[in-house]
Image (cartoon, rainbow, N blue to C red; front, side, top):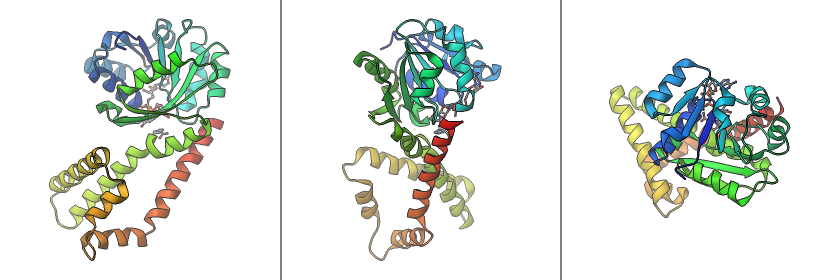
Length: 270
Ligand SMILES: NC(=O)C1=CN([C@@H]2O[C@H](COP(=O)(O)OP(=O)(O)OC[C@H]3O[C@@H](n4cnc5c(N)ncnc54)[C@H](O)[C@@H]3O)[C@@H](O)[C@H]2O)C=CC1
Ligand SMILES: O=C(O)[C@@H]1CCC=N1
């Protein structure tokens, strides 16, 4: 794995998280090239991770065995046009762009391109990411293994057969960290309003999120069972969860995921 040469096109938040995960996992920074137009972002990537940086997408892609497209969906068409003639034979292209379909990647890069669509998330930075993947027709088992080797250094992977479900993966795990961060923010603010010092409230919320996440990932019980273990009948947690339900918590989560799914589909149509 360590010798795979990887080019990132776009060096923003998601690329940084994946690069961080790769480097922590032992991938040599010299084998990672990043094409990024913003000089400040290039300098930060080079300083933080020691990766090779350039402003030229084609140069970055030219020698790479795996090319990760980490640009916004809105600029993807232009990027594909640039890269079409720069890919080396057999190169695997992994797009992480929300909503951008394999068909549109194929239109942009041509019939010969080996294409995988992926939806990672930012906890990749600490090797705690979750990535959903779907392969285009013609992708060989070796290509899938290559995609796995790149993305497993950032966390867990799951392959889907039905590309339509990628918008749901995006809504659940791609955007999902933001929902948990928003909850931690609001929990800390509520603690502050109830009298805690801001730093104390923030520490309680962060460490509680960490503890809950650790239990979710390590305990054998389901999320529901873990919730029940905290909820003493007639106790404080029950009072809080009843207030959440009365405020429409379950419906709100459903609406939030539906809104993200819809937006993913719209991004694919732009
Ligand atoms: N941020 C997240 O949590 C996740 C993001 N994604 C996907 O990753 C992609 C990038 O998102 P972020 O990193 O959040 O955005 P970002 O805005 O932080 O990064 C995009 C980067 O692309 C660069 N860029 C713009 N035009 C370019 C061009 N023509 N060629 C090369 N680079 C160019 C920008 O300067 C910027 O640094 C999006 O398609 C998004 O859907 C997927 C999963 C999670
Ligand atoms: O918000 C977005 O569009 C991207 C995709 C998933 C997370 N961030």
